[in-house]
Length: 289
Ligand SMILES: Cc1cc2nc3c(=O)[nH]c(=O)nc-3n(C[C@H](O)[C@H](O)[C@H](O)COP(=O)(O)O)c2cc1C
Image (cartoon, rainbow, N blue to C red; front, side, top):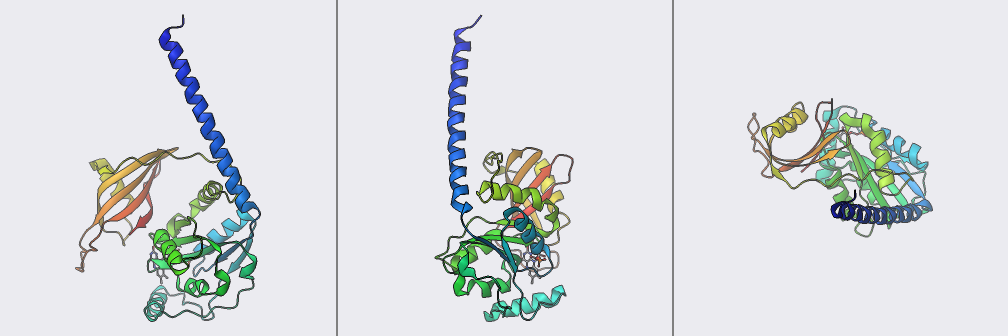
């Protein structure tokens, strides 16, 4: 027998379903709009890669977008020795030196959107990108940054691009740790659909919770995620989290600890994003400084 409560419940269900349908229709319309916005645009994937990590992402992008692709090649290549590249890179940065590049084969003027790829160097885009940003052909282009890094730098490098080219639309970018390159495929699939560069569907993730003090268990997850990475020497203080399909995603706010070898600890907190998937060891996905 139906009760009043049942009826109100089913009415409530109907309303919920109707509002869900409205939401879905709106999302579909938005998605269609974004896709149609980029469908007729000409895309170039332009990237610099010293040790092939960014090249792997550029090629994964190319296979999905079917766009033109070109590698940026410095006239004097950077040394394959890490220490030598650090030394040369730092000197160039201090002097504001723009490394000479081999002429590009692509006519930048012919493109609407440039997926601009680079390794993060010294917290920002690698030096050869500074030369590219100075090219007149970049003027007014929509830029989608993508990068690889040891610990992070997507946000800081994207901001630096936007500051350098204030007239250019700089879209949300994609970045991945060199140690997580095996996740590029599924992450790019989602990124490209979410921002309307290719067609497809994706599940919208829930919002993160509010930040709260970490529990002991969460502090242990943080330590396990960053433990083997020598550049992070920090203690988790606060955390926000959300459930994902196969685990939990965390944003930790961590306090830098003084280094064992002396030297001052940075005086600001860092944010460390961590993925804890069922059956896998927790891993950090990026550090935002
Ligand atoms: C000169 C230099 C500076 C670097 N600076 C950073 C940095 O500030 N932050 C970071 O997370 N990784 C840094 N890295 C690591 C690179 O971003 C990382 O290894 C990247 O995946 C290399 O990409 P590639 O193989 O395309 O050259 C640096 C590497 C070099 C050679």
